[in-house]
Amino acid sequence: MNDHTIADASTLHGWRRSKYSGNEGGSCIEVLDGYPTGVPVRDSKAPQGPALVFPSAGWASFVAGVKNGYLST
Image: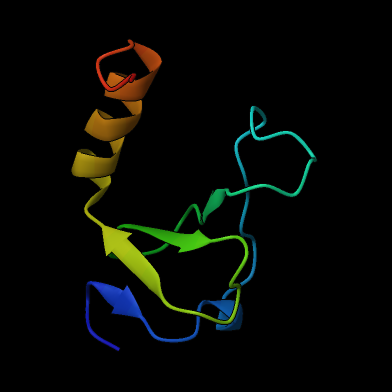
């Protein structure tokens, strides 16, 4: 494991999805709060797969951009 990836994301507990994801079982990402080196993000369909770890400030900017509509299609 390096600072940017977690090989088996299932080894960490406390993953959460956005409340806007719904319960239809579609494509979702999950994030983990409180990780010491940033914000881990994983694919909810592959919980044993890898997670990417983003710097906290970068993740906060991304979320703000989504909330403000800057990244909509």
